[in-house]
Image (cartoon, rainbow, N blue to C red; front, top):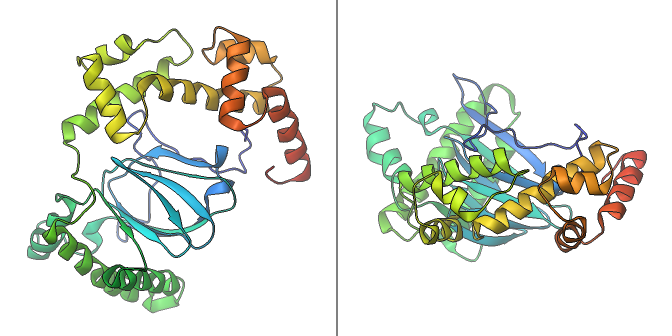
Length: 306
């Protein structure tokens, strides 16, 4: 995929926090119906936000990286993603993913009894995320409620009232799950999330130059082993592999957004060798850089993704 504005991309700041506003200050809720395949590079890339998110996979199959977890969602399944949890979605074909994003303060003010008693235990509890399967009775009910929330959008004057009522119904299940502490992961400490964000920011700012694991670790004053553990636990990859993959994504955009030679693009993306770049690119995208550029040109000419 290229820099064509018709392909959506997640907009985020240097800490990977999404910069888009979801809803309005007086109604911080948004419903989206998205196709992961339609996003730039067929990927809703790493990001986080202060809102909680619930997704439902309507059609297709998507690979999900949710905080320190990784799973494959199939049609009929869904997931709860807690506030401030870093996440990423990828797909190999059309994958329709309706979702809602909202601030918990929509349900109750932060200084209220309801917030302290029912919202805070989920937000600060062990549920970094929760995969929802129709095979489980409680989760099947949650998925049904989530679909009812989708259906309630656009119903006119009562849409907000119906939505908030259904969100509370859904939240009761999340509250009970947090009390049972049966979530699949323990939320990483704030310090670990902050360190990871600093390192990702550093990689993204300096990917075109010569970077080593020592350089990356030095940004957060950690040992190389500690940095490797952070990346493997929360991003399921190594710092060097993340760097290479980021370079390849930037190169893919240059291939479709500029007329520069492949050798020049390899160098601009941080690769010293055009041959090594070509091998890594083919392993990542399944085609050579030249073929990727040709297919992108054909796609743009036909008005659709290849």
